[in-house]
Length: 177
Image (cartoon, rainbow, N blue to C red):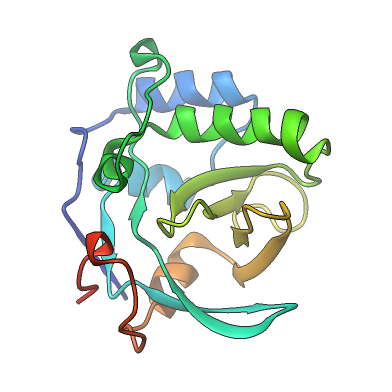
């Protein structure tokens, strides 16, 4: 299973903040992900690579980071460089996706997804929030808003991560080991 390097990039969180976030989004978080937030509150997995099977075939991608939960009072946080994604608040990722769905893609996701991390290329690693597959992890393509299955649960996703084979990732995305 992947270990989490650089945990709590925006500090620790607690159950009260999680409850406020759940109220903000209108959904309960899957139990395994709640535990992840309480213990790690973001960070980056090592190893960090996964194989994405999409309509383009199979390709390696990475998890640059998981977003930390921060107090909603922080408000909207603008990201100006790649490194700032490591502390970008989970509520900003949620709000950004909702805005894109309404204004850019002009569609709703059914079931709804929570963006919990990024590959550093504007794609989201996301959790399914309702239905038969609640808690499953999907890759949300930023160009099409199409979700692609990665794992049946957050712990299964962490267990599936592999060492990188590709060497052409942007230098700011780090070594991945």
